[in-house]
Length: 343
Image 1 (cartoon, rainbow, N blue to C red):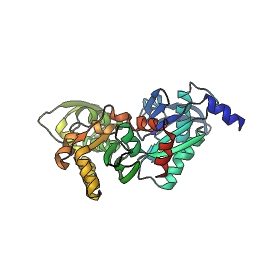
Image 2: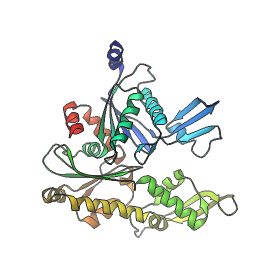
Image 3: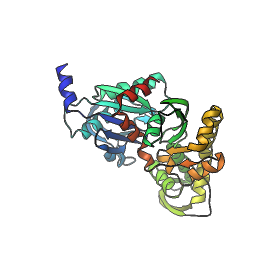
Image 4: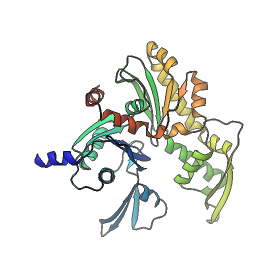
């Protein structure tokens, strides 16, 4: 009891956006202080862990490690796939924002996709406690994203949020601090990367990594084909003769490769509006749809949604950080946090 009291005095309350691709940490009173890939590399000797790399250091090692080192992404499609590695990663990040202090026991708010099961939600909570948290509040990503985007979540009016992360796309309609409707699909940023990777392999017999596919998406990907056509050089391994090779592809090819996945995301938004009560649907005509997460940065996505659904579409400043900022805002209003977690 005394130890917990002392630890709480030297610990800073945290909000964590535990993402499939990246983990962001918000510190009360400071804002976002950490944004690193959700990647861990482990070297084992005699079946015992001897060296660990986490975040940026581990991401640099993807595809470049010897057999003695294993690289993990402990989250898959928005949920914990490797409990031990996820706990290790969270512990590392928590200690890093506390300048490596040993006895830290922060209160932590952590976000999860709306579609997680009670077992998966408990796994997130247990992993965070195992990483050194003294108290854990688990909130839905969509609610945190809505608050981070500045939406009036406590008002008796509907707000629609579409949060496109690495592993999942969350579509939610929020009113009076509650989620009226929510859906979660595993079609998100990682799936778009795999679409590009598979397209290049099938059409050019070139093998590229997921990181290269992600860069292609960021630089020339679009939600629909337009009059602009950009080109990009890609380096990879030729599947025919096994030697390194460089090819050039254009933005229309990349856009075509991801179109099926983009269509699913847009159709999920349409379906959410079809399920929405008439009064709330009327609100959305005025308030519009807010796109957040890294996927919101896909070129022309906001235009595509606006054209197909016919309501205003807004992408807030820095959509990558909306979930972390929204969860961080809850640190300043514990009563609202309890209302959200109990709703």
